[in-house]
Length: 210
Image 1 (cartoon, rainbow, N blue to C red):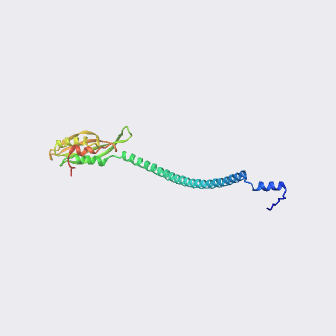
Image 2: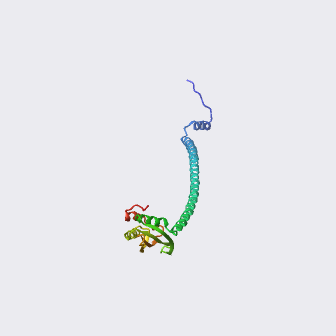
Image 3: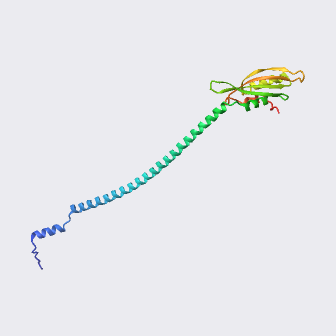
């Protein structure tokens, strides 16, 4: 049996033993260091990705804001255009309201006249203004009829036509030579926009006089 003596100093042997022994604290420290490194890198990557996402969202919001500003500019321009158009319509409507409704008056006369009746002359003239500030026109009509019953039917039809606010009963005179009746009418016309032509045909049920 061989015996080998270790002549190394005791301090050296202790240090060598300590160096080769299991050191849990050191391993734990290394693991913690690795964990913090990995976590730090992960946080950096996540922060970078969130920054990119926020930058993309900011870009989208900026594009949306730019589009909204462009739409607002277009809407403002459209509002200005519509206001100008509304002012033009208001001026046109005011002009039309102050014009005599000659077409409506002539149409009502033609519709309610029996065959054999005729108009000698018609004169439109501005009268006063109503409560709305609109000009009220009058019409003086010289006409002829075959019989006086036609005149009565005419005044009744004109009163229900919706065109006239007043129909003065005519003065009439029979021509002994021709047998025809000459008469005059004084009509007060409703202002433009207050005329209701729906009652014209219903009140007579007649075809217009050719």
